[in-house]
Picture 1 (cartoon, protein in one colour):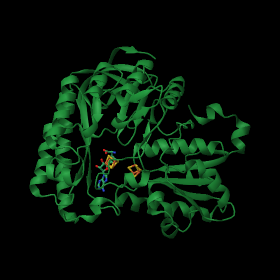
Picture 2 (cartoon, protein in one colour):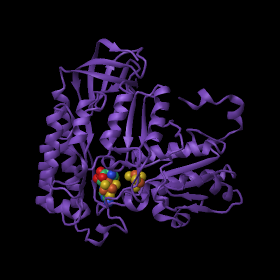
Picture 3 (cartoon, protein in one colour):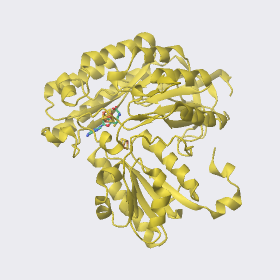
Picture 4 (spheres, protein in one colour):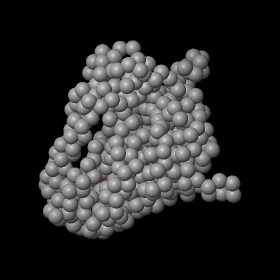
Length: 458
Ligand code: SAH
Ligand code: SF4
Ligand code: F3S
């Protein structure tokens, strides 16, 4: 639901405008929606133009050096808006605020406040402090914060699909990764709080929910009355909201259980699609990365998924050029990509992060070799993605319609449960409806289809 629908005009006029720019993972998108909710109670309404804003927040990511450099460059542009509007406040929140803390006041001299991922409740207090032109910061991490009583403002992902955070933090300490340091210890959000949010989304007409955590498989709530694991949580939601599609991210391969696979296979509204980051196909690199599975164990999980759901699509993350990665290791990653037959991959050059275990290893693969290896796996992924899509030609899929295609006003688009984008000629289908589409053509990234009769109106 859009804000305009439920805020009457007189109230809106009195509210100040908040612009949040979000970088990084889906969890940051969900967090920006938590922040928008906290600040709504403090008199701020989200807007989409930074020039209109009274408060600009940049929700940042520290995962790779480039991600941070981009934010610094953008932060300079945004803080410059203060020249024309002296009352404007600019803040940096999220993982970079956590990692760099007050160094950021040096790098971005115009910013007024910093808040780490567990300090968002404190934003109104921090803002008060900045009213006297004092710089304010809070980066204290918590072991318990899940923002369980906050109802996020779902304004960033349209009104058909939404992200719902089910846990925070990470305990896995993959050797290259900064997340356990920027997000703190893993903790699960109470079931009732998750169900409350999904019920609201259902009432607002959302049709697809993605449950989020750095490793959703380790979701765990245990108290005197309840015992929930990720599969039991998923089952509970799937049964209550059988008309909604359910997705989740991310699954750490070491914790992907047969229970989860069977739950996915049992409930038709849990999408047959999974993001299962492999990182590398070489056992010696996986060990150095502290991933705690071997390539063989990983492939066993893929077999299990395909045994129970033959039409499942599997996507992954790959880091290329990790410390000590040889030509042979790289070839093993290529072999893994072919064996796992990924539908999609997010591929990155290794970026050394200060304070992680891998920062003590030698970053010994040159940038040039990292670049060449990256290009090689990108090319391979394009080949695999195209083959995947070609195999769909002639098949019929149920598609959840999301809206009009950007390219043509005569075309609409949606997704299959396998998370593939399908474009088809249509003019007047209500977004949020399910339609049947027969695939007639494809590119690497998109299926092109024809609408066939019999759509499920919702
Ligand atoms: N929790 C998720 C992913 C979190 S970060 C998981 O474990 O899969 C998203 C991806 O960024 C990671 O899967 C990894 O491929 C990549 N990444 C993390 N740290 C990185 C680094 N230092 N250099 C390059 N890529 C990195
Ligand atoms: Fe990082 Fe590993 Fe945690 Fe994912 S599981 S967030 S890669 S430490
Ligand atoms: Fe980036 Fe923080 Fe997410 S480092 S990937 S925004 S958890």
